[in-house]
Image (tube, rainbow, N blue to C red; front, side, top):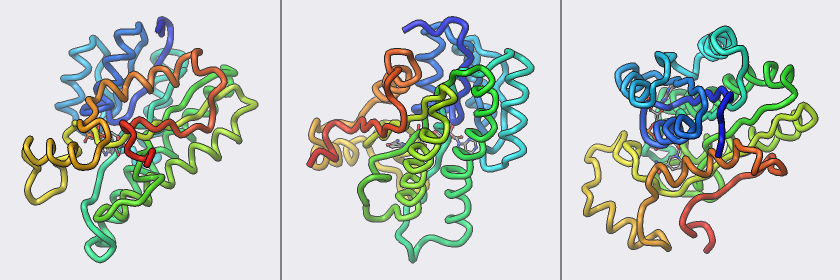
Length: 249
Ligand SMILES: NC(=O)c1ccc[n+]([C@@H]2O[C@H](COP(=O)([O-])OP(=O)(O)OC[C@H]3O[C@@H](n4cnc5c(N)ncnc54)[C@H](O)[C@@H]3O)[C@@H](O)[C@H]2O)c1
């Protein structure tokens, strides 16, 4: 796919699927703007694809989100695609989720998607065209034990996607979500007392995933690129599941 002359902003682009998405768009010719709170990793990804210095900060801060969109318009004159990929997980049921954990995950996963999208839409309206791709999850559509707050945030992302898609359909802005299953990224090991071993992950995949393997980040990133492209011109408000059949049962 050809993204020459496109400006693509990706949050959470320092790691996992955000980094893979940055690489896919750069390979397709886009000017990629990397946004993440992890400066060291963000700079590595930017250097790897020849992108300018990343914009470093926290997407749960609305002033930061307004600022990165303004800076992008100043630098590039436009914003064609926003990918809201930044996110965290809290590995706990309701009783194990503190007020602080709840606010932290709501901030990153829900406020971040809302603040970034609200900042981007006026510029896409002026252009008469734009695409936003949010990172939902299978856990936003079906429940999972031990990740209560995460499920709640991803359900919210799915509804932000649908409601904003309807609000902005006449502006020429398409808003969709990609909903991955289990993907081989650092998130699988994050916030656990003991990170899973490769053997644990293989067992998890064989027992729970119809294709009996985890996704690689690129397999999701390619779907994001498709959703941003004119090949997806009739798609808005869609939740696109990429889960090897997990939720087909
Ligand atoms: N890994 C999976 O199995 C899986 C499955 C479904 C959905 N997802 C979703 O996909 C997205 C990417 O996840 P990943 O697995 O690549 O994770 P990851 O941990 O590899 O990357 C997440 C990135 O987001 C950044 N980030 C987190 N909070 C931030 C904040 N408040 N402000 C700015 N940056 C922030 C991190 O620094 C990191 O670079 C997330 O939204 C996640 O919920 C992941």
